[in-house]
Image 1 (cartoon, rainbow, N blue to C red):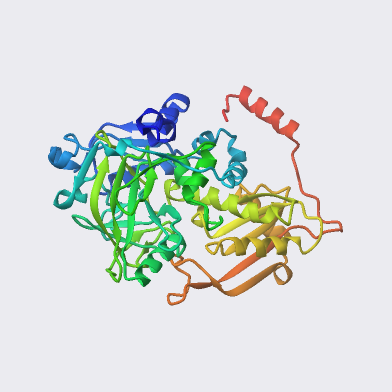
Image 2: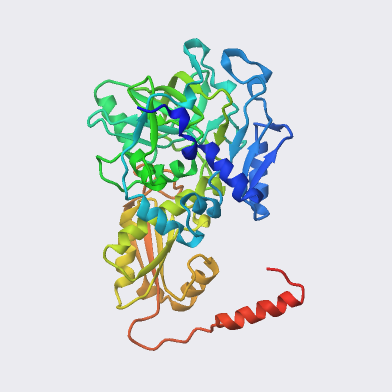
Length: 480
């Protein structure tokens, strides 16, 4: 097996930062002033978003962080924090080498090209190893993001573990609340593979060996969000498909778990069996403080890191850093489902304003009545987080909510074009879902024109007239 140190860079967070600095320097912001790990970083990201900006941010002097000490191998001058890595569609498209408009389709296609991983014998995160009583999570610059949060949270931590039955591994985001020196509260509320792995281990009276990876390339972030794939496929094989080459992984010393060789920090430990403790509240993607949690507990036995490690954090709440990848991956998954039976579907958009989860807009060239209803049922069946689906004609810009709402206002007959599905499985974190069984009523809206007969003609300004208008305005000193 080759040594990782020679060739992991193109798959690391650092390689992404280098790409942004070289090709998109206006989208990289370094903040050299000291910032408090309590609230400052979150506030800065949100102020930038209010100004219409979403750069990758490197906080060079988070405080407090390591308290200026080099004890236990931690960096003497603290550790920089990188955030807003996944908050910009242009940069995510650049990672795949495609135009922004082609991002969901490119993601959909490449995430289905599973490429076996490459196992390397060493990794950059083996520079520093902290074990046993020396493990102290408080020495990492873990932010406290909102005043309502139950404590500091690791938000960019990817948990990896193996199925106790099949041995197939998975990797994904799960919120991790610092509860003590080596103890993290964890919520597995997506109720997918990691939840099932822990349940199967617990049935055997065993804790689930797991590793938390911090500091990865955005394509890892994107690939980890894929949820519809065969049970024998590894998440790392999906991520390899996005890279277009084998994803390089290295083995931890807990449960033979493999994690990205180019990561910054790895925390090895286990999710305890038969142990539940209060966790939360946490500022969730819904824009609310969520007390809902599966209340699992992760105990850290070992921390491995690069000698000059960077700490990655995802800004919580409704930030683009938290939500945008969910939008793109859900767009790709729903589009994949629809294209199987409805080739006249043009595009899918999951808007940020719907928390990146709860609403999907579908554009289609309607050939016959009933097709929008088929599309709605397929979309609702693809992803249980989705609870509202609006189908529009292909003359409507689904990336412009104003245009979608215009179609709803002028093309929907409520008695004929809106229907409901009560008692459907919903998301635990959806504050409207039933607090006991987490079901919701889902809704579909057909906002397309009737097929086969005349309908009012839409007012349209042709592209050549728009171009002339912009040229005239430009001559008058108006910039676009």
